[in-house]
Length: 135
Image (cartoon, rainbow, N blue to C red; front, side, top):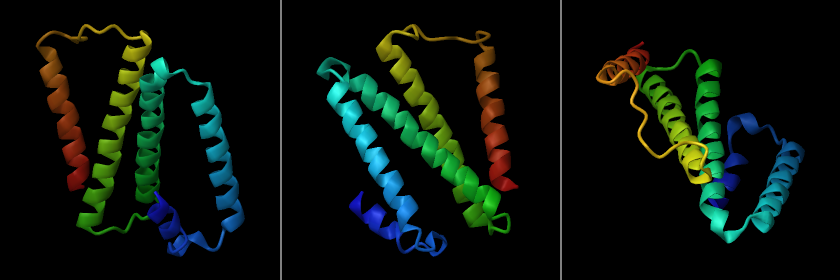
């Protein structure tokens, strides 16, 4: 994490915005400490799942923002950006579901949509994602 923070200072788009970075860094640290002090040890897995969903959502939004800002990408960069969005979105969904199951908001039995039709839905989703990789 320390390397990621240091690397942020060397990004071309950073433009020496240390004040904004410092405010965000400190506010995130204060919020994280407050959450860590208030959560009970028995609920630690729920908090980890919830925070993991925020991390994966951030990765998804960063990849999507990169896609919107850099429309003149070569094929490899476009595939990398699309994979970032796809993987981040899948991990975000999984983290939200795991948090919901740990909290008891989502039942533990598998949700089967349309019986055998769930395979068709999965194939269509994968085909749609694959199509965006190739465009």
